Length: 497
Image 1: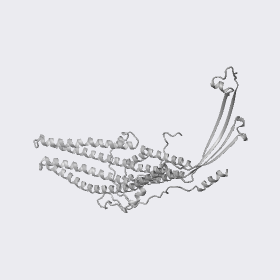
Image 2 (image 1 turned 90 degrees about the vertical axis):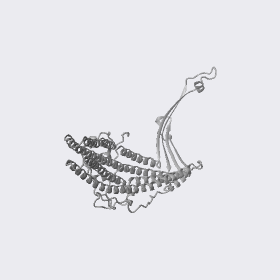
Image 3 (image 1 turned 30 degrees about the vertical axis):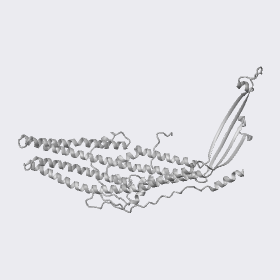
Image 4 (image 1 turned 60 degrees about the vertical axis):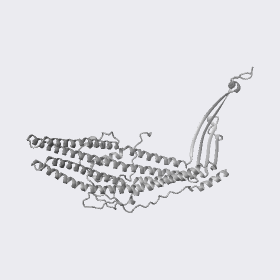
């Protein structure tokens, strides 16, 4: 027995050795500041300070819109993509238990009862008869055997293959958690973008309806002048055409608004038409928040869930190298068993019914056609790919912020010009109409002025929509929309209680 136990004791003493590389998070330098950070302007509706660690976990509340807050709150608890991500976290945590169980002793219990009956003349009973004239007998024999046993096996994790598997499973759980948080960032941005677009479309619809009423009043005035003989039917037809053109733009915008409402409903895990009545109620457009703390590019490495997700995936790939390397080394197993066996149930627990066995084994792979080393190289390549993906995620994160800052800066400049253009076009339209009423200008001047006025007002609404959309994109690029709190785990629809 000592000869068996001696190498096992040595193997246990070696436990703590772990093959494969130890994971160290890579240090990636980033820029000290953003290139396209807009300069603060007294005319700008939003200032973007460079430094600051503002809490962006609920950035949408800065729009001060109760309906938007309500929509996002409901989506965070009901969205199907988030529920899927939560389920994946549960799955990953269960896999941690599975991975850890491989390094623990496995204990099994077994019991069986056997009853064997045979005739006294097996040849006669099985072969269909004995020699001619041989006597037959109905006597037989019965054998009964009862057994109760326990067996245990333990693969000693000498070289750390199981521990590397646990390390990979834990990193994979963290990967799943960051995937959930990345989903929260995407969800909040999608709902906010859809909601702000909806309110912008509703504002454009209201603008066109007001303009159509204004043009209808002008048409009534021109028709009165036509009946008095001051103008020709040409002026009437041109005004009718302008009004009809204005009204024709409304259905397209209504369809786009309906699509935005449907998109929001689906994000809330509801039927497309479920929130139409709620969102059709008139509401003012959310105000642009006065300030956003952009922070430094280095904060993206902590704030962006997709970057943290990529880093955890690299940790998983690194641990899997160790799992593959452990296949090169011997595996030590302990096996033991206790059993009770007797031909009579009443003596099953007697002392002389007890049997025991103990086995220590070592298995060392000698030749597997290069399979093990090829698997190691494959895992190393997977780790390389994960490293490159991590580096790309950082570059993409910085690019997203730079792009959002640039779009915001340019759209802000564009919005200032659109405001001046809209004010000038409205003044020109009013002047042209007043001059036309007193006969100082031909109708074509009024027609041109009204067309320009409407186009300028629509462009202004679209410019304001673009600016708020840019802000949503910036919040998303900065990694806003998730919190450090433990995710809520709703009950599984398929798990037995």
